[in-house]
Structure formats: C-alpha cells, structure tokens
Length: 143
Image (cartoon, rainbow, N blue to C red; front, side, top):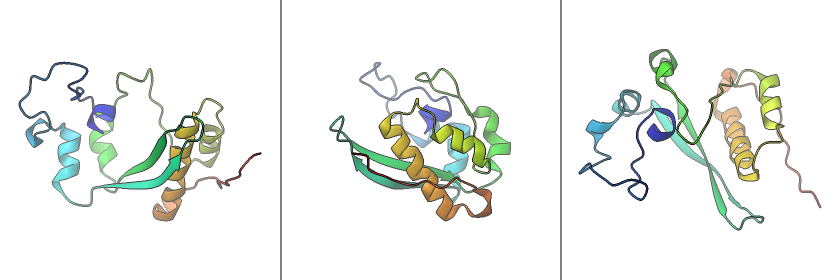
C-alpha cells in the first residue's frame, strides 16, 4: 500500500539492487502508514473474492482496504499519489451513485480489475452504512 499510494520506493530487489539491510523495518514506514498501524482498528484489510480467470489461466484475489478512521483524509489526503505504474489518479466517492455507475461500466476495465472492483464495492455495501450509495451490481454468465 505504501508503494502504491504513499510514494514509497519499491522494495522489490529483483528490479533494483537492495541497499537497505531491512527495507520493511517499521522505522522506514511513511508518515501515513505509521499512523495507520499505530492504533488497531484504523485499517482493515479483507479478501473479498477469489476467482479463476478462464481467459488467462490466472487466479485472482480481490482485496479491500478500509481505513475506518474518518480523520485520515484530512490528515494525509495530500500525501496520496499515483505510483510509477500509473499516469494519473482519480478520486471517487462511495456516495456518488452516478459516478460509480459510470466507472463500473467503463469499457477500459480488464476482466480481473472489474472483478476486484465490483467485489470491493459489494463488500462496502455490507459494511459502509449510510456513507455508501453504490448502484446495484448483478452477476450474469453470458454464453
């Protein structure tokens, strides 16, 4: 999560040489990640689905990361950034049904990305309470 959202350098030693003795040491955490991990319950991670991709032969684990503490965005919203793999970053609200509908129906989704996104949104409807207004998602198998 730090590499994807908080600007941390990749710790993958297969891409660059490893210079740090312990790249995952807690002292190297970014400020937002340190704050999230200091108090239990601020951050929750769940596996929301498992799928077998019959097109690629891969298996997919859909995951959801929920930050329960509502002060997080005010504190750290300015530190969130797209990583090197992305050319831009977009923000969506779980309270904006029209924008979420537009996002879900975008033809640019990969099949595994759409699977993970809809699984995460489905789970948010179960745990998010009144903050979540997600359009109905229906599954179908096409022949």
